[in-house]
Image (cartoon, rainbow, N blue to C red):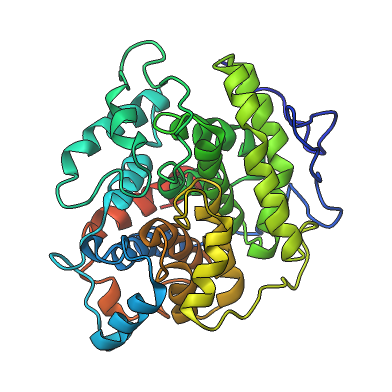
Length: 390
């Protein structure tokens, strides 16, 4: 099925049964490209630190399911802080987030690509012992993969799911942005992120989370600062609807559920002074874990911060905006909180690594990381596919 034409200035595209959101800010150039490709080390840092954020936020399910950021930070202090941690199994395994992110990263090559992604998601279910699959996006990930039929015509599609709002599609999609980083590849990024997302989360709140994280990865690879990412997401949402409508799949259900995601992001960006993609962002200090937990809960569905497709990337972006170059602040805000910490950690740490690299991070946090070699190899392959270099 073809990808609909993109009206990059918004055109006459509008949200179904929802408000029209701002289109391209006057100072945000959608055709911006770096003068040179990002170094392969940036991709390596993005993939490896996505695993670090996952394993750290997960802590063998102990911290993912802890609802108190204050308790998590107290336990971290008892461990001696981030510098004292050796992030490796059995105490610090990666969760299902990294297993499925690897399935995405390693499947973004060849044809038919979507069938290959579906096959890898199904296969990944065999590597879930001790990783709590479905915890951060229950109940749809296991049931979603059980409905996939790789190899059959449109076997990568599942029915619309009114409960498919979780963040499981978002947390595995940074690699899509690394694979399709160029502005000219936006139609491919939209198609692959939406289709891979709704393989398990066929609900706009779920699969648009995949689009958001993929877009953040592409913008980060192009050197765009995080202050601009949210405005660009709002610009892209009408194009995403064009694609969804063009597929003819569950149009009525998707249209009815569509407005929530864009409305939530519009409110967030307005509160941070970022609707136009400018800066500096108006991010509150929130010095204590309890204060951060309270703010994140205000964005959440069902009382679990970062659990859903709209707010997992939102928590991650908030952390990126607040932390700047500080890895410790990035972890404090994006990884170590009382919500779905491994999923937000995967996104936040991966995006941070893409722009800041591995050097500021204690070696103990990544040299023994589970699947580090696979994450590194996937990064190198994604860089070669995206930029024609190795």
